[in-house]
Amino acid sequence: MDEIRITGGVPLYGTVQVQGSKNAALPMMAASLLHRGVSVLRGCPRIADVFCMEEILQALGAVTWWNGHDLYLDCTEADGTEISGSYTGRMRSSVILLGVLLGRNGHGRLGYPGGCVIGRRPIDLHLYALRELGADLLEGPFFISAECGNLHGGTIVFPGKSVGAAEQAILAAVLAHGETVIENCACEPEILWLCRFLRCMGADIRGEGTERVIIRGVEILEGGDFQVPPDRIVAGTYLCACAATRGKIVLENAPEGELEAFLEVYRKIGGQYKVKSGKLIADGSGVRFPVPYLETAVYPGFPTDLQSPLMTVLATIPGKSHIREMIFEDRFKIAEELNRMGAAVAVCGRDAWIDGGRHLLGAEVCARELRGGAALMLAALAASGETAVRGYSYVCRGYEHICEDLAALGGRLKKDTGNYFYGKNTDQ
Image 1 (cartoon, one colour):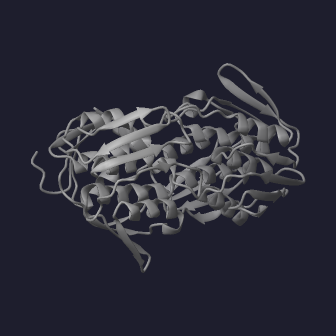
Image 2 (cartoon, rainbow, N blue to C red):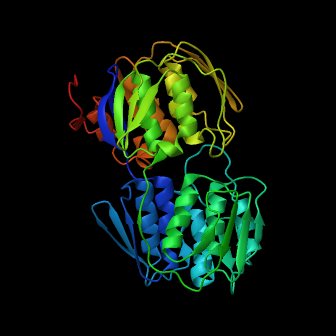
Image 3 (cartoon, rainbow, N blue to C red):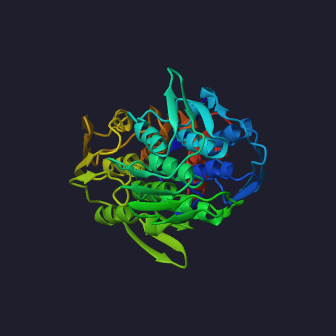
């Protein structure tokens, strides 16, 4: 069974290391195809989505190997041009490989991308960007194919911000002839890191981290050797675990500069933190204030990926809180599961109202997507009794060792095998 059992009611204490960023590593892996040689991603997270992308690159002809957490990607003979829907259906970010295949080979074909079911995530902006760079696209019932003799520079004006579409445009433009200007570009840190990785490969990019990115195409890219940055969403999840259990934890390698919007809310609910010698020291023992209104937003606003973990925290705080989800219209799937545990969350469209402070009790709950699954684990840590969280495989898509990390902080967890325990003082 795909299940984790958690016995809650214990505040978390201790120190953990923040893993490498999933959302930064995946586009870097895609970028490695633009060099016919070896690139290295150091500190790469060993998670399901990374393994899926690794399988895709291998299917295209790449040779990959690991040395600890350093991932080596030899794309010398990675000349495949077709990616099966059996791969792309598992992971939405695989769509950014279309621009990479165009840049490397002049043509490519892939099945429609999948991923977590959290609402409509159309790829029209991806296709718009590629067309502006000279690609001819054909959309079939089960696939997308693209052809282009030579990609050329162009002006791409996004009508709305999209991280994936921005990455698509950047990856396609670095080897295109001439200059590409991307207007209204998303500013998420993962885009900044992708541009830095490409620059270390020899790309000519200016303006990364702003809404206007300018790229001058180059003839060839060299191999990249780059440190994957820490995962801001994992760090925020662990801070929510601290708050939900009213604990005190230390995060090593936490990217606090990328968490400003989240940390502002953390302070407002009564959490305290300080940064010292590269460590983020958090105290959630004073968490007690509800959030009257909060909207998720593109960076630097409150991240949608931390909305579900925050909802779990708010369910433990007396008073009424209100969250409006502005990124994905169907990202409140966790509400029903929290209510099974005794929470009072009412959802209407993009709005969720949390009548917090009710005593959470252990129950059988089901994860339906990555961040919601992690949030249910946090709810289980805050609840009395034992909670069975099914759908743990969703969590593995983005968290390398969440069970070990939570156990190191005092959490009591047991895998579904019946004989594999995390943490101490379990009653099983």
